[in-house]
Image (cartoon, rainbow, N blue to C red; front, side):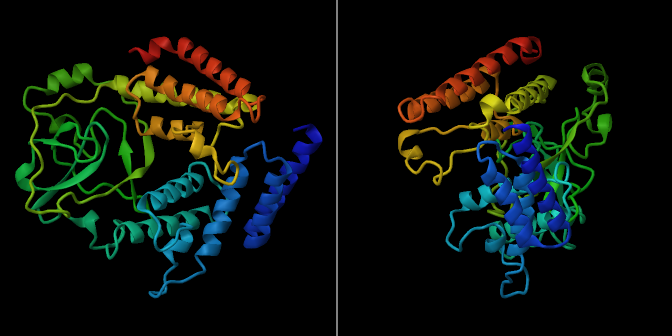
Length: 373
């Protein structure tokens, strides 16, 4: 895209933002779409965020029988939609409306609509954790307590008889010690999400006071510097694990080791590499997002395992990669799919995927020391 085209592209997006600020949702959406149509080969997070805000606010005008915004309209789903499709839509909109990156007018209001809609569809009849009298207030009477898995930071609510026991996390399947949290997880205002910590001690624990006898000295020696990264977790919800079957106790496991700082370092290093790949727009612009059925109707008939940089970044943030080789395999999968589908149709695309894989290999080599710690 040349300088003149880029100027025109930005001009339309600026108009779209001004119309959004003036509550002209339809006009704002049209100008954002016009910018994308002007240069469809250049993905624009800026345009996607404008469209996401406008779509959610327009959908919120359709009301359900209870007078609240219709959750299916907000999440662009139908009454018979598969739960995985609803979850996918929720994650996509939550990412686009994340207040840490979307500073557009009404983005916060749109995010609240999305969070309430997903809460209504995934837990019918259950109030948002931020509502008074909800699960966030559970455990106040002392009969139950909040705890968190040290591997995936998923928060659980158990009867107090399990406090201090070695249990198995129902989210990731790993063992963890059910140490009591100081209280319910702090829910982000206007959402059904909570913050999770990447610090040495899990969320809510009172530092060394929560360590077993004799462990305080060792913890002082092994704990990393006070440098905590607190992120908004859009994939994990506050959950009552006894809601499915109160008679089923949590599974006991042998004493498990605490998460090591190396896993966090691996995740943060891989995320920086993903950012480098995404920023190389001259070679990555076709591989940023999943291929849609509209773009290639027969794509999933040929490609069995689709992959893109957005999916890879999502897996990095969920800490699904156990080593750099698994990460590289997914980037290789992008190149493999490009050859599989485009060798005969669009022969100019596979070389771009090969260059993307080469860039990935260079980044992995440059960060080898961090990735092997």
